Image (cartoon, rainbow, N blue to C red; front, side, top):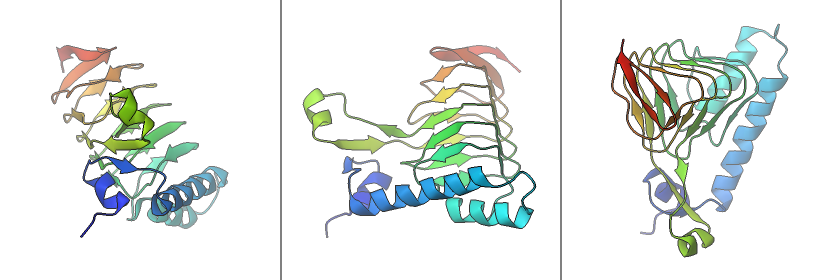
Length: 185
């Protein structure tokens, strides 16, 4: 049996993002992100919780300071006590696993999505993704970009403006472009 484009996407294979099912799921996520952004700061917690449950597909105590953007929402797995500051972008084409008590500074960007390096293959419109994992008690400073396939170990701190291209071990301060370990915490 042939795989659907969504099955290919979630398996990390080349897939077409123009697939109607995927387009519909992205539109649904955009509408939910818009609804979250339009909530009054005094809105009842139950209303906010309901929108987050719809977006992520599970109940969460995460706090999101809008605006917040994601491709699908349902490919994001959130631990307890996660905080997103203003303007975070999560391209959750593949799974994004976020541990407990993770802090996202403003304008943090998490990218699982990627494109082929070969120009002819890129012109085909096909793309792929690699999952990202962020351990418990991680703090990502403002403007951090995490690239496809990266794992960030528990308790680490990523300095503002860093571009994380490779795995970062647990318990370190890392920063820069490309991001590298500066010291053990």
